[in-house]
Amino acid sequence: MSLHRLSKARLAPHHFKPRLGISPGHGWASSYAHAESRIFYYKGLSNRHPTPRQRQEVADIISSGHRHTFHLTDLEVASRQFDKWETTMKGIDPYYAVKCNDSETLVGHFAKKGGGFDCASLEEMKKCIALGASPKKIILSNPCKNDRDIIYARSLGIKRMTFDSVTELEKVRELYPEAELLLRMSIFDKNAKIPLCFKAGAVEKDWDELLETAKNLGLRVRGPMFHVGTGSEGDNSAAYENGMQDCWKMFKKASKLGMKFDTIDIGGGQVDEHLDSIYSTLRPWMDKFPDYVHWVGEPGRFLASPTQTVAVKVIGKRNGSVTVDDGVHGSFSNVLQEHQVLSKELPVDQKGDFTGPVHSSEIFGPTCDGLDTISKELMVPNDIRRGDWLVFAGMGAYTQVTSSGFNGMVRSAEKVLHEEVRQDEYEGGFSSLWPQLKALNPLFGT
Ligand SMILES: Cc1ncc(COP(=O)(O)O)c(C=O)c1O
Image (cartoon, helix red, strand yellow):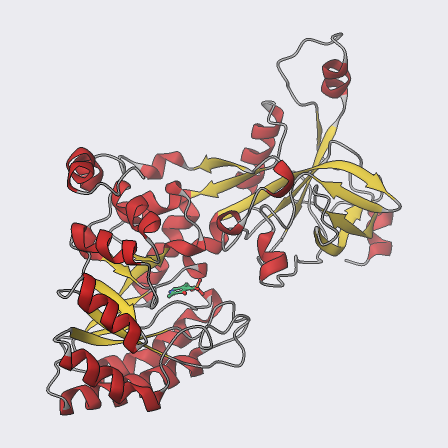
């Protein structure tokens, strides 16, 4: 819809008065209580506006008196994504990449649904175990680990871990000789927003040396692992094809050295819209490799991105720009770190109607950092004012987990939608073994 048509339409946004639980007539609080807040819903980092149910929940939270930035974790969406992986990527076990979003709500939910976990550190392993994950379903998928991560993994029997250098092999030999290793390969995809192959992964010319060193050190290598890079915007299935060809070559090398490989880990980087295409690429290879091979994936963004919706409050206006109470050092950390761009499409109101008239505005975060800009051109209603809320969908990946709280600003609070699907996920599992684990390992509780 054009802006011209919108301004003619002049659709009325949803108005309501926040219930602050403070009786009128008491200084600053009373004038705040009388201000009318409106809520404007954006596609954010997704291709859809928040759903009617999500909009209702956001409005309820605000009208119940919540005053600061918050994010809504939708467990129904988390279940939907997990189930989509299981039905589309048949035969490939999802090991959720905790680095993408370490919300206890999400980690606990995926554990309950039987998922495994890709952890990078002691803290991530500790969190997964506490929320019900089995050590057998955790991969320490960081090719360069701290000593304490390896020692901790050993104490819990978390055996599988990745490597990509001789130094790492020597470290593992010293600290955890019974570990089961995956050789991380370097795969380049020119479309990945953030290629990971320069930071991690062994190139082909180094594979022989790595496999031979592992063999000479008496270490067990179970197979290859790769990651095509994260944040691809298009169909990146060609990168998985390259990965498969390299896995095939590495299996052959291993067999010449008398090593029996039985695992292939395709890492993360899966794009939601292209999951079918990725699977169609992998399927013929799954038929070609031996039946006993255990296939693993480490999806992060695919599982987490659509699960969270972020709500921020307008706290100021200046020279046509708008300042909100969360920014690039908080929920919008991926705008700075991954150069993510919020959708420029028009916002909708509570009823899902387009709001208007609107204009393009720069949106600043609350800190004193000159880089704290969450959007250079967001469509905001012409009469936007202090106390209004802007709400963005698709904010679950590399957002809260990479936020820093710089300048002491209020951190986004987590709210949960569809608690009913959470069931009894914190009961039983390994969390019930917590006291024994603590006694076993002094690193617990550090
Ligand atoms: C080893 C590893 N696995 C999985 C992931 C998750 O990737 P994505 O969020 O693109 O699925 C990452 C992301 O950096 C990673 O480094």
